[in-house]
Length: 379
Ligand code: ATP
Image (tube, rainbow, N blue to C red):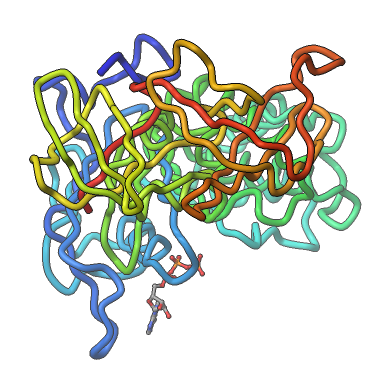
């Protein structure tokens, strides 16, 4: 497969066999009574990585973060930081800081006092505190707001104060639990980019917990997708989207079409799939699917073309009828009901103002796609 690498082109320690792991979860299990929140989970995070834990509510991602911070201990397994086993080390002695969902700012203190709080507790000399606070205010662009109290700030500004406070002590690792949860959509998007810039500037390792796939995709170098206390896949955003390794991940991130089928023929370069109702699909990469295996062919809507005539050069073309059309401005989404009854979702970018091949409800239509457009999944 062609490279589906990192966004930061020169940063991919996970593909370097000699790179030293920074944070290691080694067969970690966490039970609460007879409930297993994290199940025999192993995971490696590298220094300076922006790492996201993504999953539905209750999948165990916050528990994982809290164990790294030291608020919970694993029932079994080890957590290592820079080679050191963290068991028994209290939170305040770990080079880790956590920014909470609620920010937990002190309401009666000004912005600068909030930022200075942890430094003061640590016994840092007053002039050093002053210098560090000024540095932090500049970093999060809140210099003019130093004397305000939290209630005199917007949600986004409060979020930045919390961030400044959590990096003021210069932790090596910053843990962020749903850091942008309290912000509205527009502000959240802006703040995502700010967080990425800040992480780069400070050269810290960030581990962020989120249930928002777009957020994880935007910010993270790599994403761990979790389900029921287990990691389903760890990969770059592009890999997670373009090369999911299971139905769960394919479904979890973005929209996807799934064709149930069987591998009819398999060679090094081509895999031919017979769909449940007889349709034939030819793909370049059959993954680990052997001939005869029951599989699912997963393909994203934007990889599918919808045309009124069968494209002459199409390797894969299936006929049906336009069932639904939604014009969304930047793109149009089609639902095409194939002759075998399956509904296919396809999306087309509206690159020109006028479509050359306008299609509407009940038109006969062909959906077509390239042999490298989707993935074959065996689990
Ligand atoms: P959310 O996005 O809702 O915060 P999450 O993926 O972060 O979800 P966790 O907070 O890690 O989920 O919780 C995982 C599971 O463990 C949940 O089912 C939760 O109810 C359970 N759990 C967490 N903490 C405790 C606890 N102290 N005692 C008992 N059960 C707990």
